[in-house]
Length: 268
Image (cartoon, rainbow, N blue to C red; front, top):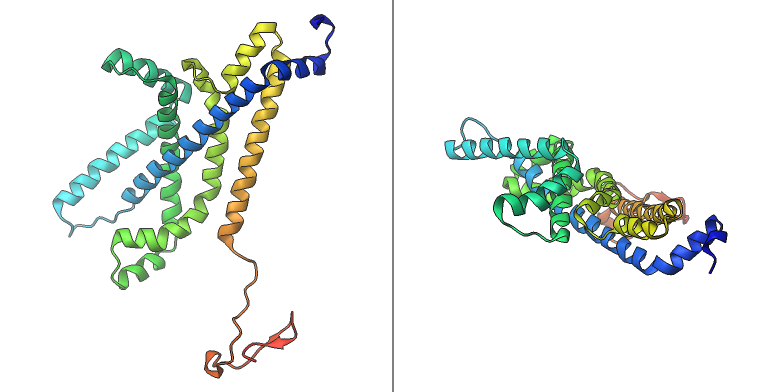
């Protein structure tokens, strides 16, 4: 086959035919890293966010106040360090630094999972904290008034409402992670960028190879956006609600009201 006579789309077709399976495998690794890293990062952020919102007053036990103070200092350092340094640098430190300093031989994939998870956790910690404090204080006060503990209030009252507020940020982090896993090629993680670079280097057709990669990245991010929007709509519930029909005259002490859509009456 005379490769020199191929047009742009001819090269695209040729590269897809030769390396399509490897590119899809690389895309699968990218999705795995992004989804698992985002999930674990959300758990980290959730734990930190809840701990940061634990109320502390002068009447509390001194041990509780000291422990929470130390934890909040540690969390603040963690958040600032991982938000203030590039993921590519973090990957190099975890992968090479763990072996050099501590003798821990991490695999490239494990190092990738750790880096994406911890990096996402630093961003999600602030998102969760913001989502929790955005809930009206009356919700917390009402839960406390009926005897709920802080953890019961968080899990049963505040968190379900905060989840809806922070869901766009979760989706945003997932999309960012799908793209940013490309930096893990520096530690030889065989994700989409690494595979594309390898395929492009064989024939020196970088434009065509990375055109294919960009299309795959776009499909993955659009799919993630669509799934997050569907999830948001599910949490929002229906736009309109109808009162349940009943024959019990005591069910509606205010009387009956016309149902404009069906021409019926509630309670009839």
